[in-house]
Amino acid sequence: MLRQGFTQSTSVILALVTMSAWSQTNLELPLPESEVTTQIVIQPNYAEVHKPEQRPVLLAFSPDNHALAYSSIKQMAPTEYGEFWASQLHLLPLLPTGQATTLIDADSTSNFGFYGAPAVELTWPDHKIHFVISNGDDSATEIRYLVKEQRLENPKIGEYTIDEPYGPPPLQQAIAKCFADWPQNVVEASNAKWLLEGEKALYQSRQGKNGSDLYLLNIPTCKRQLIALPTQSAEGRPLVNRLLGGVVQDAQLLLALESFPADVAKNAKVRSNTLLLQTNIHTLGSPNAEWLNWSYGLGNNYQFEVLSHQPNKVLFLLDQPGQSCKSKLFSLSERQLTSFTVDNHKICNAAVSRDGQLALALSAKNTSAKAKTSEAEPREADQIWIVKKGFLNNMVN
View 1 (cartoon, one colour):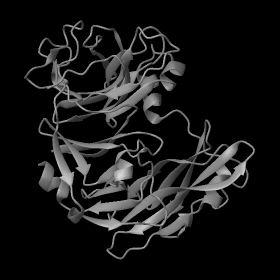
View 2 (view 1 turned 90 degrees about the horizontal axis):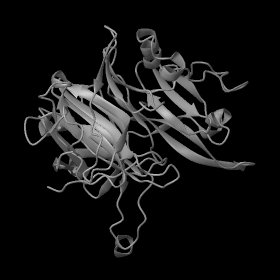
View 3 (view 1 turned 90 degrees about the vertical axis):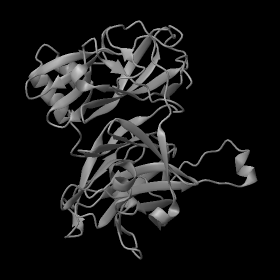
View 4 (view 1 turned 120 degrees about the horizontal axis):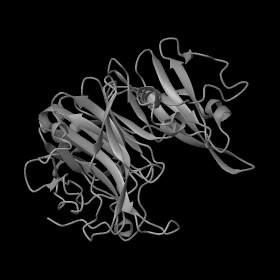
């Protein structure tokens, strides 16, 4: 096992075990050594492979698990501000011979763009597909597509203005109502994530000298608890932590944090890495609280997304923005963290259906001799794999 230094900015995921761990009661100790996760390689014979004409970006299964919606992005005519890219929405029937169709084209989504019209969110919770388009700057519009009727819910949306902008998320609204001593404007601009939707959440204000303090919130009871995080690197340098996300599975708390040296000048360029740690949520704040570090070999600049949360396991994605195709897929089951890779492919994005089926947006690796000497990395997906039903249950349990 190799100890991971913190000479650079570091993203962290946390979990509790009863072995070689770090006690929350002593904040002056560095992080524990980083462990290597169990790894499962997904082979092509495990999946149906689709190679649509449009390069997939975001993925979302239908509620009945019979179709997959995905977004793509198309280059449009340049504007006075430069290149302009607009998103499209497609539907892929989950059949061996299923052919993708375009539901919303780039000409339609470009109405919502200023510097561009990239898709930032895609969900399919019911009879409507929810498709959120950014204006390339500071606002977004949610388009809702009626699948059965094969039309937009509001056909006139976009004719007059970029409407339906995002307001403060419901979680920030609940926190502001629950904890009146935290200024509402600070809460609305805070870094807050659900652990268990409607029940437990994580909160960082991101403002002031205590802006990196991380709280565990119980929303129904309006109670909060400060989570003690590591404040020193392996070399003894002070750290600052930023919340990326988290989840609870079988009393195991999984946190994703970005950490960087607090003594680095503000104008200095600091890269980030990623750590994985784990703890028992019931021992937070007690002398028995311990952490295990699963961060070995991870990179930087990740976002955290929970794909599937079942009683016996959680599947989550560490995703890098900008379609770098460096996403990393993990499962936490019975205190064991497992990483998934795909044979000769890079993972760009992923989604899980309600019945546990896995979809992957992948980019094939260039295995030529010339490519092996090049530093170029695949940045766009060129295919979709629908992993066979039962794979996750059989491989993770």
